[in-house]
Image (cartoon, rainbow, N blue to C red; front, side, top):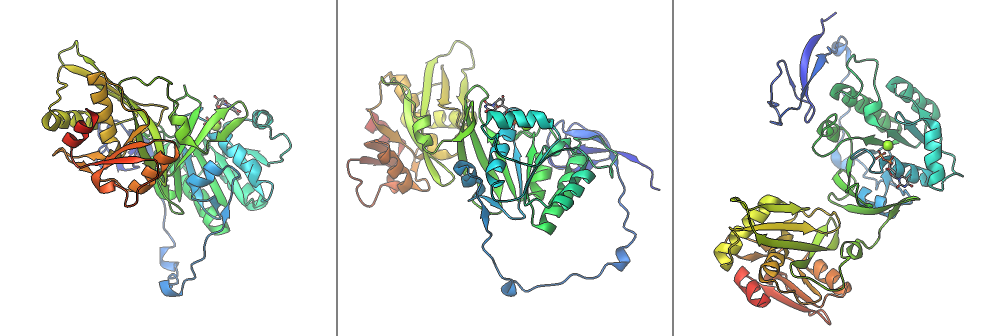
Length: 449
Ligand code: TYD
Ligand code: MG
């Protein structure tokens, strides 16, 4: 038998090295290598393997995959219309954010029509029953298995043949085939692979819950991302009751789709009009507040951006953002100085996207600058003004994708003045809305005067 050898496995990418080092040589992440044991896989029967059957793509019948709706429309939206037969979903997020709650609610709905199974390695059956009571699901009869041994979970799946099963959580499972500790990268990967194989062979829909943050503080999210069909992430402050579920990878739908939920005392409730939620503005508008029309997946979203520009009392002024990219802010302020003649080198600049939403697209650039200028000049922006547009390094305002949809969403929510890139100006006028198209930062600043 091969002797066990110590190996170092990266938590981020699953890459291996024989020596410990500070940086993973494969994905260049720092401090992610953890000690593990090399486990030799034997391939004694390789010579006996038969060759596989080759098919022609034109002869393969493409079926539209039937969807299994979960009864939670926001969850279905991020999934691309519902769960898919034989599809494997990974849903990651910080502990306590609501993953078990969401899946229990979804499973209760699915259980009305299909055979289900809830596998929990985290909580006992009575804890789950207590949660179900709290969620008002006392009448529903979901089969529950509290188990952490993969072999036993697989045997139960084979025996019970559920059509939809939830594994809460993938990190608690371990297989006896490996000697490494439960929760280690190799264990998590092996368990996920075995379960995925079962899902594909039997057409079972599986949902893995994973305690993984994007930074991947726990066993490798990227390792799992390759194995599963769909990766969803739960986001949101624990301080606020709003929870966002974002699709990160989806073989059956659009990525960057966003589902918005509110955590109530009766579980997670979908928020069908999130623009209204993020736009919870004060009656009296203040300088430094500007509404941006951003796009999340297929859905335009109106979010208030607040900027505060104040005299710096430190040699290096601060650039702080919440929900936006701080490097992008530094770049925008440089453009504002060079092409707009407004300097901030002796000012602290704080920018906040209200409501805990994260805006990653450059279409928010112009709104950030408009909010900053409003704060610098201490002047309130026109009532019912919405802004979007990307700002280039040459001071030009570049068009953004889905401009027409953004204009329509802003109009729908009662904004009657929209500052937008010239190239995004509507071909047909929108009744009751004035769209001011600008091609350069100078034009935009002129408009604000
Ligand atoms: P949970 O689903 O256990 O989180 P996770 O599985 O992601 O670790 O959710 C736990 C939190 O949700 C907990 O802090 C309490 C809160 N909660 C509610 O506010 N309302 C509810 O109806 C339920 C069931 C939980
Ligand atoms: Mg949980």
